Image 1: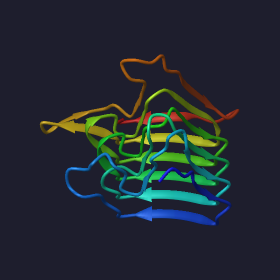
Image 2: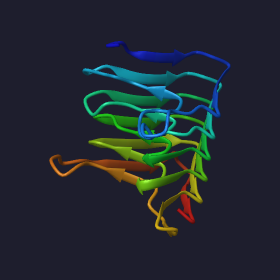
Image 3: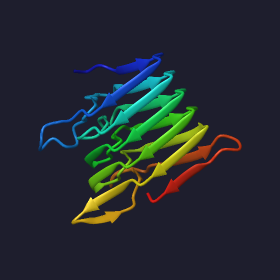
Amino acid sequence: GNMDITLNNNESVIFNNNSVLKGYEGSGGAIRGWSNGKGITLNNNGSVTFSENYGGAIVGDEDGTITLNNNGSVIFNNNSSQRGSAIFGGSSTTLNNNGSVTFSGNTAQIQSSAILTFYDLSIRNNDSVLFEKNAVITDGAYHLRSVYAGDYYSNSEISLSAAEGKNIEFRDS
C-alpha cells in the first residue's frame, strides 16, 4: 500500500532468514516499501539486524526515502539479492548518528553487494562503519563493489564521514 513503514524506539529489531519467491529477487526479503513518496524509517532502536534475507534486506522505490538514524547498532549480514543486497532503492538513503554500522558477507548477482540507492547516500557521524567481505558474484567471479549511488538519469551524491576520532573501513569489499 501507500504507507510509510516505521520501526522506531524498540529495544531490538531483527529480520532473519526471510525470503521472496524465485524471480522476485529484488523485491525485499525483509522490508519492501511501495512508496509514491513514502519512506522506510528505523530510528532510535537499541539494535537493528538484517541477517540471511534472500531478495534484499530493505528495498524501497526510487521516489521514497530509506532512513536508519540514531540506532545503537545496525548490522546487515549475509543478505543476498540481484542488486543492493542490504539496501536497495530510495531517492535518499541515510545512515546517520548510529553506534556501529556493519555490512558483512552480503552478495549480489548483478550490482552493488551492500547498498544501491537511486540518488543520494549519506553515511555520517556513526561511531564506526565497516564494509567487510561484500561481493558481486557473476559467472563465478567476485567483484568488490559495496556501494553504488545513482542511475543513468540523475546526479547523485555520496557523503561518507566518520564521527570525530572514528573510521569508515572497507575490507575485502
